[in-house]
Amino acid sequence: KNQVEQSPQSLIILEGKNCTLQCNYTVSPFSNLRWYKQDTGRGPVSLTIMTFSENTKSNGRYTATLDADTKQSSLHITASQLSDSASYICVVSPYGGATNKLIFGTGTLLAVQP
Amino acid sequence: GAVVSQHPSWVICKSGTSVKIECRSLDFQATTMFWYRQFPKQSLMLMATSNEGSKATYEQGVEKDKFLINHASLTLSTLTVTSAHPEDSSFYICSASWGQGWYEQFFGPGTRLTVL
Image 1 (cartoon, chains in turn red, yellow):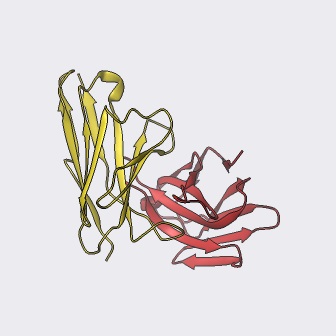
Image 2: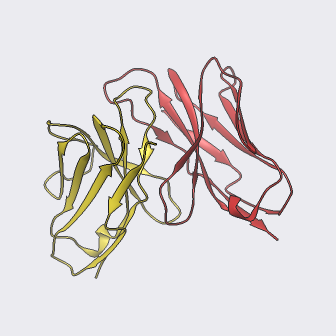
């Protein structure tokens, strides 16, 4: 069964600190993996998209890594800011199929405190 | 670029009424639009996929007669919740894409529906 699991479910860090969010998936065959940031009451915003051949991709203070062999990904946030408080969702896109539905993780809720 | 808007951003209605939610791609032509529903503290759940000019494909368990989807143009899709009931209260999010496959999906800001 195609699944995406994220850990931790929630995380509290102090402003300026770094943190790493984890994502494990069982989706196969695999096309690409995406990280989204979703502010409360808003739609998700794309942070990174990686295909199976990419190991790392950065977007400002966000750096995503991918290990397609172990089916694991991480999202590292550097020098956190209060505005980073949000839910971070790992999404995997299966390969092939007519609709290519996205498989969503349940998200990690990050709270950055001053 | 790649902006998707939704209207309204929130709506409150009485049980039994119908509500229409619009999803627009503002600066690109979206051949495919997706409708999701999200309950509190849960992830997005795909309701249906619609391609411009054709009937929507609904996910298993989603009543197509209750959730009417119209993708009449390359920039507009609508979701109508017919005879809404309190259990339909949720956060509805659309996304738009240039196509299927691994194309990026751009999400709208969501619509909060509360049925009294």
